[in-house]
Length: 280
Image (cartoon, rainbow, N blue to C red; front, top):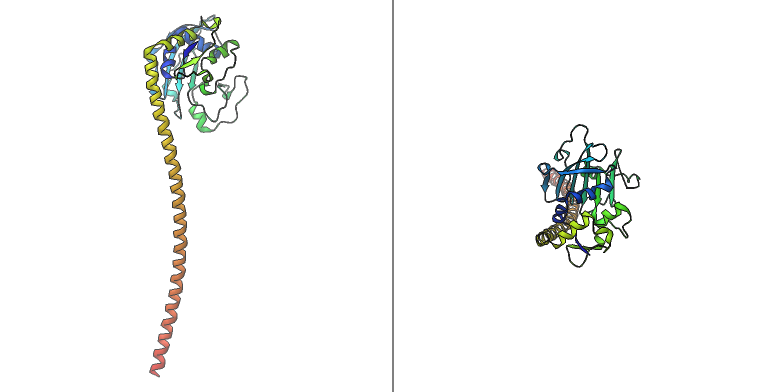
């Protein structure tokens, strides 16, 4: 069975337009069972093509306690700003889940959770020390899913089933699709149904093509930037060598000037001596 690839922004946005799919996406990452989902479209944000997120409200099934849930995408080296998120009401819980298209070198895990002031894996193990730059990029996020690092050999349990929809090892020869197990248990799932629908949508596929062209352009730009930086380093190295050579030449010239000054003094003294001898 072929489904659309939620790695693409247009597919992910299409997914978030279905509240049942949102509920299934969030449920394995939330400690409470949430219901009564509503989209808060007036608080959704898009800082650039690299950062965007949607906000939702929901309530705990038993207590009715309100929740504010933000779901979005974060790409490349861009960072979030806490002021971009809507402020929660008194007594309202917050959950911010971000999916990343490009994995971070500092975090090897596919899923990382911010808990008790520290970043941990799903087993609760604290991640190795993260540098300030990485921590700044992740500020305000409660849960991070690095899509390229997601690998699910066989979906076992709700969490693995949800993550399996992002497994890029399932990518097929068509650039927009993923192969998904043809199993009855998936056919009634909102995520599955929504991604199948996205895969059959002409408009979604056309927007994926636009996105692919943009990404290729960004990749070429990044490659050109890397080439320019490499050439700059080479030029810098050459300039350093030239500067060192000039310093050596300048030093030799100074030594020659000292020798010439000494010779000039000696010659002046000899001329004075000759003039004195001529007068006597």
